[in-house]
Amino acid sequence: MEDEALDVFLTNILRLMDLYFSLDKNFRKNIDNFNARYAFKSENERIDASMIFKDSKVKVKNYEIDDTNVTVIFKDGKALKNFLFSDSPDIIGSILNSEVSYTGNLNYLAKFAYMANHLKYQFTK
Image (cartoon, rainbow, N blue to C red; front, side):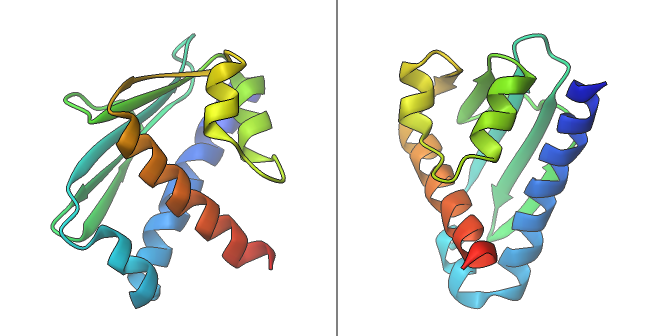
């Protein structure tokens, strides 16, 4: 049950990010000429969502997509929850602690982490 709730929560966070891109032209500059495909999932595959950046637009999917630039894999729902609700999420620290792994290009993951942290800052300042 908790994994299902986190799955919905993750998808909604990605949708919130999409909404913020459409409302804030300065934040939208982060995706000008940026084309990328991201997938997020848990090891047990109970949590999955994706985000596609193409032609300065965003699409959010509530399932894992193929042909990603990076796929982020959370060890479990607890690892996702710890990452999402951390005061200062640290993707590299999570990788080193084996709570998160990834396949693909680390640079894309770093860019996404930057955008997510910026969005979190906007809503908590």
